[in-house]
Image (cartoon, rainbow, N blue to C red; front, top):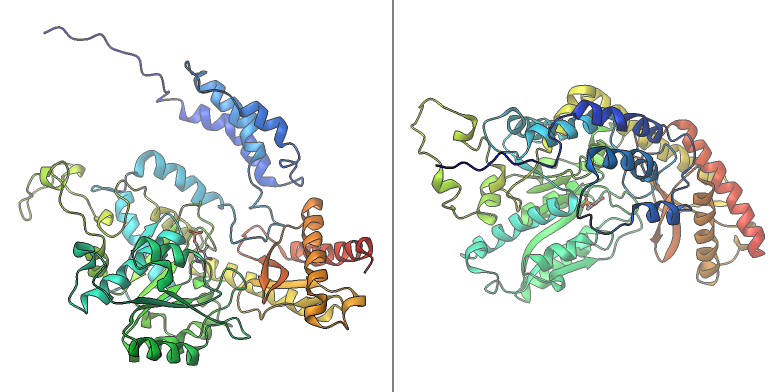
Length: 505
Ligand SMILES: *Cc1c(COP(=O)(O)O)cnc(C)c1O
């Protein structure tokens, strides 16, 4: 037999240390956040440097590393900067980030009899215990809250249909009369997409008005569910918020738990951002008994500051997830596994899947994500994550007090967790009533946000509360200090006065 000649592999498969050493100084510099970012202003420069046609011949490892070091890393996103309090996003701390690299290199896919697969389970078990859920609940790490919520609603759909004797995963959804998912209007907009993906349709979502505390009103919910039932609708789930993205409101979870139990409706708790708020003794009561929920979502890539791409769905009944997302066996995978003798010796880590996480969700080849949760909790313990959550909630409460004490600032929504919403009201508009001044204030606060961001010391975001444009800060960022929140309030006052003057208010 004639063997072909050894062929060259073009990608480098060695030299990891040198590659990392090339990038480390640039990463360290970036993460020091010493200067406000210039990236947006310089977009033309760096995008021109990066923009090139598909190379027919590669430039080699060095060329890539140099470009990463000199152009890409310095122009990354400053959402981990201490002054950033926008959205619900931050950069990972050191250990989860380094663990991410380790996982990419040696832990993925998250299959097989291996340490990363084991830690996927242990990380989930720790996460449940952290939140106070019984060990009997089971979960799956996902790419984020969108997918985690989707999976939770998938389990809810399976549950609702099975009670009518239908298997929607097998037979489709046409048979279920008028499915309904209930939520407050403050709920994250991914709920509509989830309803669409599951064939229930966006019109299955019933958005109920929020009360003055930005929560779902359980009396209106009750009224609506009873009326819908009379009209032949099928309640599939109540989607409750444990920390809305907009204002951080926690729905009355204890009351919802009792209502859903009484009505036999699936209770799904979206705590992508705020579920870890339960760790703070001063607000723990808001969360009621989380074990009353049928499914819960929490995003490690938010308050736990793991690297981005980490959400989690936790359900009471894992078998429902399995039935909802069941994979039929494939000859090239399950069918081709040697039949393991019971108690027979393992000959290799490829003789089994380990914990078969790919059977609980959508993803098949999936990375090891839970290892970052494990790493963070091992690094800082319950004590460390609780301290972070308490500190951030306290920042928000302190700022809320400062805002209420300031003549020109108004708190726009109650503060329950680490999010607070506020707007600037110049003295000339303070006595004017709401509909009359609303457009002026919206314009002023929009310009205020732009000016604060341009100065680069503080970076809040914004939202609408009852139709008013308001600034919004959400503290989940481990790098934010007390000094940064003092800076934030100074910046708002200063820029508010400047913008008011420039607009002639
Ligand atoms: C962030 C968030 C989501 C969406 O999660 P992703 O991780 O962005 O996919 C859903 N619900 C709430 C309450 C959130 O804060």
